[in-house]
Image (tube, rainbow, N blue to C red; front, top):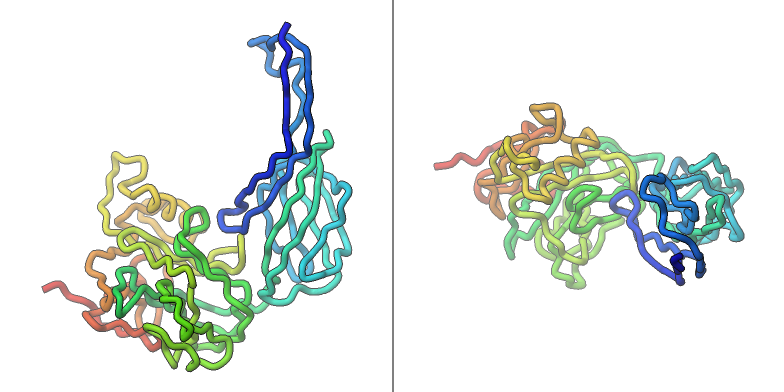
Length: 361
């Protein structure tokens, strides 16, 4: 007869939800269980002494509308011993539980793009509990029409990496999130504040900031920011960690909110297809980008499946001043056909794109 020791001694761990959420902290209840018993029968599907010692796992979370937030776990849950706490404070009116799904109803509308943190505790039918934090931004009912319009993934010291967005319909930027990459693989992200924008506006997201005081996020006037590539005709925002853009195989995606739908995306590559490769010729990261965009329906492939490198935009002739652009009147077919490389020194960040194309000599 064997004696087994089972323990879940005060374990604390972090989990990413939906690819690009802030860490969710889970605490497993302390407990030590000493059980006498024999080794399980190898032909038995379940040991005689099989006991559930694991807490529920948070699988996804999303803001449903102005007053509702929804969590989905890997098993049915109950709310146990702790009312949800929201910071900044917001009254929780309802808790609607249906098996693995928990929907929280707030007493007031969330502020557009405002950052909130909720702390709560759930348990499964065996009493194993999970306490977690979740960060979310307030629901935005006025998402603008917006396109990724220009970028230079091979920037230089004087013309550093930058992404231009173009507003096709007025709205509010609050809560939109730009990823350098895709939901399951990204270098960094930028969460937009609540700012009203008009049709025809340009937004510049500087991805290679120097960290100087002149680099100011422009939430009102357009002429207050300095720094390289700052524009007085566009609204400048700065990613402080300065991750830059992938030079050879990369993606940029714009989402309506954390864990929200993809609004727009671009995928680029310098590689050739390899039909004998399970990754189709992609690098490891590139294959994740292509797979994520296929799942989201945000990039077209000739095969109808995961885009191959030949389906991406060919970045080979891009340089720091030969940016990748849409046309002056942009098309949006979710494919490489929407894009071209401009001639040397033809970048137009903060202004209408040129339709002139680079021609190899």
